[in-house]
Amino acid sequence: MSSMILVHIYLLLLLLLLLYYLLLWHMYLLLHRHLLLLCMYLLLHWHLLLLCMYLLLHWHLLLLLHRYLLLLLNRHLLLLLWYLLLLLDMYLLLLMLVLNRNTLRLLDWHLILCYCSSNYGNKDGKALQHLEFLSRI
Image (cartoon, rainbow, N blue to C red; front, side, top):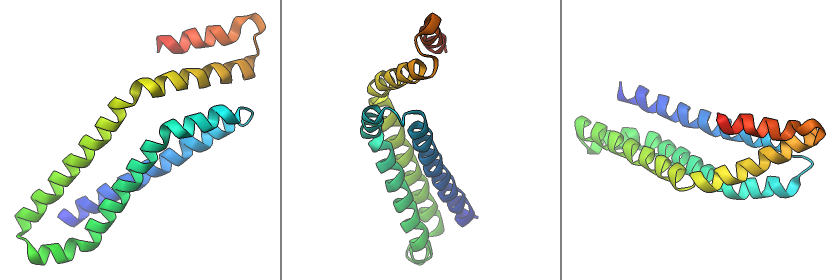
């Protein structure tokens, strides 16, 4: 039972990493004309990639060692260890997102403005209307 939970957690982390790469690919497609902004975006978001890689490596190693840990520890202690590590990882993820929220928001607004001005131009102020709409969301 506990091994199935761990496999689901591991698959969820893999899915998160895949979504992160899809987000980066989407940003590349949007900003292929603005390579400087894309590089700034990647530099500010590198911590999320490192965190995803840490979580994957961490859980992958624990899944590999699960059988050996089960021999060394009591089943209840091992389950408690899994849950404590999961809580620690979730805390790290939340802390990373909260600490970098303001800097990410500032750069994301620059990217949205750049995207709107390149797609709509400045005809009839559509880029500014689009930005005002996004700021209300």
